Image 1 (cartoon, rainbow, N blue to C red):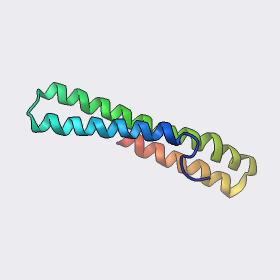
Image 2 (tube, helix red, strand yellow):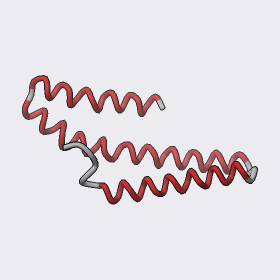
Image 3 (tube, one colour):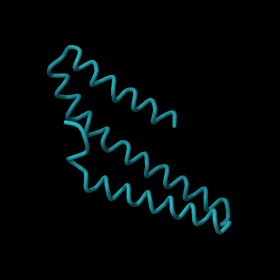
Length: 93
């Protein structure tokens, strides 16, 4: 199974909140708001985006990786490699 079927509604709400935070950051920049306040908002949006990233990762680990591990072999190895690569990219960002 690909996608975000299980928690799609919650995930979509979180993405909408992040979009609102980004619009707020743009407004703050346009209005020359105090940089500390802008950085605080950027930090909050960054944390929110990480939460958005970790939700489907958790689903993937508990469903796809667990099922592939039961099968074993090359399928299992690939299903473990995928989240490892994703986690590496997330940590570097």
